[in-house]
Length: 87
Image 1 (cartoon, rainbow, N blue to C red):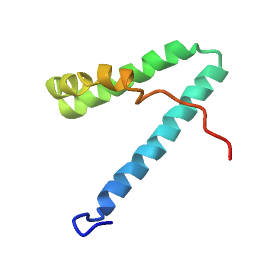
Image 2 (cartoon, helix red, strand yellow; image 1 turned 90 degrees about the vertical axis):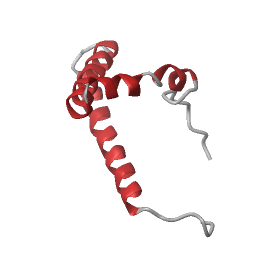
Image 3 (cartoon, rainbow, N blue to C red; image 1 turned 30 degrees about the horizontal axis):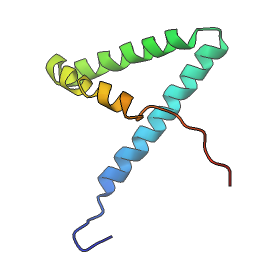
C-alpha cells in the first residue's frame, strides 16, 4: 500500500458478502439444472429475480441506469469464465 491508499474494512466485508451471495446463487442454479431445468431458463429466472430486487431496493430509474452498462461489460468479458491455468 502506498501512503495515499487506505484500507477500508467495509469494502472487504462487502466483497466477501458478494462472494458468499454468488456461491448461494450458483448452488441454486446448479440444483435447478440437476433437476432438469434448462440452464437458459435458470439464467432468465435469475435475471428476473435480480432485477425485481434491484427495482424494489433502488427504483426503476436507478436500476435502468445500472443496466445501461451491461453491453460494455458483457463485450469486455466481465462475465466470461475462462479456464484456470494449472500450476
